[in-house]
Length: 379
View 1 (tube, helix red, strand yellow):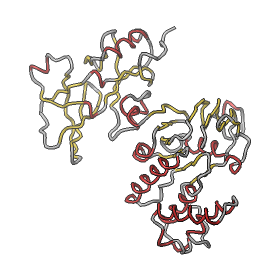
View 2 (cartoon, one colour; view 1 turned 45 degrees about the vertical axis):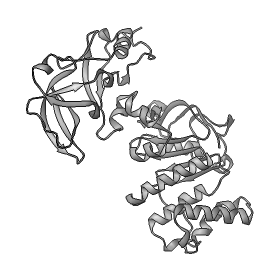
View 3 (cartoon, one colour; view 1 turned 90 degrees about the horizontal axis):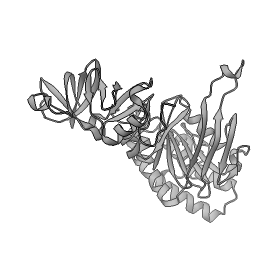
View 4 (cartoon, one colour; view 1 turned 90 degrees about the vertical axis):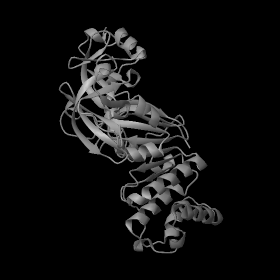
């Protein structure tokens, strides 16, 4: 097990021409991941997740910065010398070996005694539900079972400093994914390995990891627990990427007391208001937006009471989608669109209003969350 420090790390892939014409694939960062943590690297395709994972594993040397394991500089060490296990997106197995022989292979390479090998292989076979197929040649297995062998070869070793997973469940049938994610969680709880799991699937990330590292366009935007990322995304991309549907993001202005969306005032809670005032947002040129989760919006009938309620705004219903347990109501506020989740079976009023809780209304300046610990935007 190891803590991993990515120290002033950045990467550009080789390209002809001036360095300025060769953008970063991984923007410079300084990040420490704790010993024994279960992390997920989450982001869209091409955002830099696999580049970062391959730098940690030693398959790729960063163009700048260092990689430290427990304070030891391993930047120039091979993957083997870093003592990590890596599981790839597609199965890596030896077709001529049996399932049990495939699992034993990395242990035999390290000179482990036969009794320990047999015990670890038996344990891993049971964990992956492959006991009955232990003596079958890998060539006879389907893609699901071959990928389970790949997972097993990463998990069979107990001496590794970290286990890295690069979208390992891509080829697995959906009904097996929940089972395997559950097993990975159990393995982490049992052995306490440092685990890093790359995925573009937020469900995989949020159910596997203690902390999720959200990436986009080569940058780490936020590291946090699933709850932190959902409740207080520190970047608008995090808010829109996480959640189904994602967070509503609406352009606004700020007059020193409230956010204003197309002439409609949206109340802010005391902490957000104080931070916005301290950062001088009423007179900044920053692009301002509010973010509100669809789960935090309540669609109600517009009447005299809502007209006098500072937490309610009139909206136009433009569409309704039945999602089973609830409805997704698409709305227009001024010229901007947003959506709200509405209880199953509850009627949708023709003349509608939204009740908006200020405690659930976040304010963003240049896509970054406005909060008390942020530096002022104005000099």
